[in-house]
Image (cartoon, rainbow, N blue to C red; front, side, top):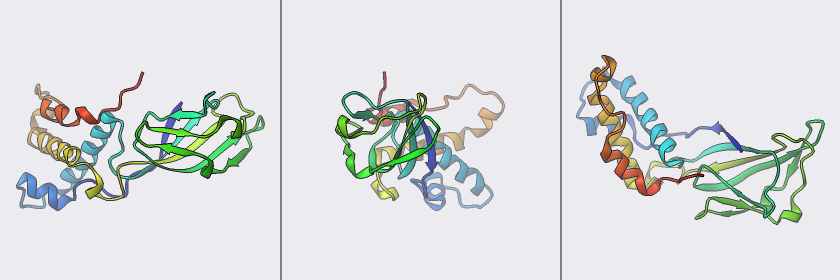
Length: 189
C-alpha cells in the first residue's frame, strides 16, 4: 500500500506572528526562515506520529481489497473518504461510491462489506482511495500537545541553526519533543 499527498494543509498549526512572538523575534529579517521552519516542523511531527495535524488529502493505492473489507490506514486520523476507484485490466478507472465506506476513526480503518467491493482488473495499484485525514481544518482542532511540539521544534531549530550549518552535534529533535508526541505515535508493523 502506497500513499501520495494530493492536497497539503491549507494552513499551518502556528501563524508567523504567533511563532515570532514565542521566539521573541521583533524584526522581519527572519520571516522567511521562521515560516519555513513552521512547515518543516509540522512535517517532522506528522512523519513521526503518522498523523496529519491539519486536514489534508492523500491517495492510498492498493493492489487488492482485504478479505475482510477493512483497509487499515498507515496515516490518520481519517476524516472522510473523498473518492474511490478501481481499475480494469486496460487501466480504465471505475468510480466506487464513497458512501459505502464506513470510517472507524479510533482504529484508523476504512471498512466496507467485502461482497460490495468491485474487484480490480489490474494486478498492481488496481484500487485508489482518496482520503481526507487530519485533526481538523483549523489550528484550534490540533491537540495542544502536538501544537506545542511543533512550536518547540521551531524554537529548537531556530536557536540552533548556526550550529547545524557548521556541523555541530545538535539533536535534530530534542527529547522533550519526542516525549510530547509519544502518545500520538501510530506504529505500523
